[in-house]
Length: 127
Image 1 (cartoon, rainbow, N blue to C red):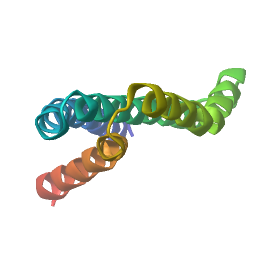
Image 2: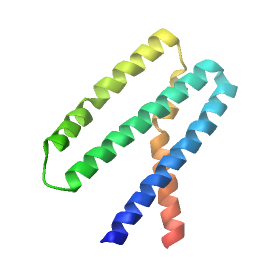
Image 3: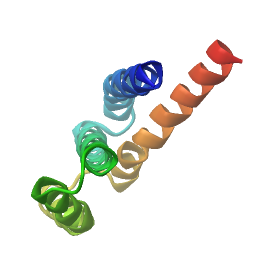
């Protein structure tokens, strides 16, 4: 059981590293393609994606660990409100800063790319 927990934690660390690499590469590529509006949109998108991923990890750890606590209930409320919060922040950033919508969406989807990279890593390492 301890090995499974360590494998899980190692996978989460790798996903965080993949997201950091995607943040750097994607922000630079969007800056070249669309200027500061593209770089800002991608940077906000990946920051929101990373924050959402962290919240989901916290809820999974709270629910999967010890018996239900008030802390787990608090994470569940935050998890439920995250789309409203992130959507409101996205609207404000798009409306007032004029960032590129396509770059913002690419940043928001970066967690999917990081998880795919991890799945490929697992496939080629443990297969």
